[in-house]
Length: 382
Image (cartoon, rainbow, N blue to C red; front, top):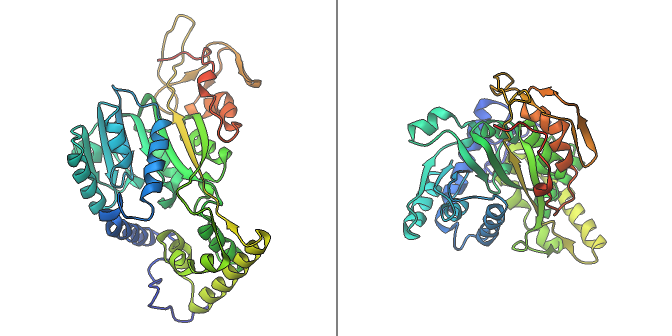
């Protein structure tokens, strides 16, 4: 890789691919500053405000929040989802990295007369029970939400595994994300990086399709409840090549892009720009003057279904990865998948979900919701 001087104009030097603790801290600081800057206008004149409001509404509608529930909203921003949830349940807690976002959330909550929400500053990529206790919060929740922010995490799979530990039995982790090709601007700059043989990673790779979303939940020990895809109509439907090319510098300076582009030299950035423009021109020709934007977002829900090793009389005993053993009371089949013999015991909810429930939900077609039709009769429930 070239060792030519970096440009100060784009201020790329501190934001190379986050591979060390120092890199991660610099990246986190960058993200915090971006959202501190956007906080005041986030709910009103921010160009993404209508998108985020619609996104919050869709996730809430897929979360099955009930009056007695306690809800935790992670990377809550100004509390769009938390404030909606507060009108449906007993108590809501919101956590976000940005102090100014939290300040805006508290202000909006007061103005709306909501008295059942609490907001605190926190980097939720490493959330701990100690932090929650120090803030007077519970350490178990009936619903945990994360609205359109998973993409900002360096290791979303690790974070989801941690978050799952804060669910009550029967609780649900409700997340929204995006397909791999979401936002043609971001997708094309990553395509260009591939053409240039630069080291990069598609920002929405972790939630790129239905199976990947299901796998994130299963690896966290959760049973997949639903995976739903929605078109986000508040984003531009299409671009011309000229319009798309004009976004290059802005996308390059985005914190997520800077995770890999921050180490590029000036000649490498020029090479990337040329590849980006060639891709946009090709797509415009293929689209007969239009480059269609990918606007598909995904909403996926995992449930902490607690079961215990048991005899037919219902005796329970401890064991297993989560302090319990997991056992199927009688053999059964879910839509032809994975017959489980009577008395089979699994070390974790993840292994059970892969054996039975997870396989069923992993093959859900985009947009279909069939979780209410699953027969859980074979489980010994706590």
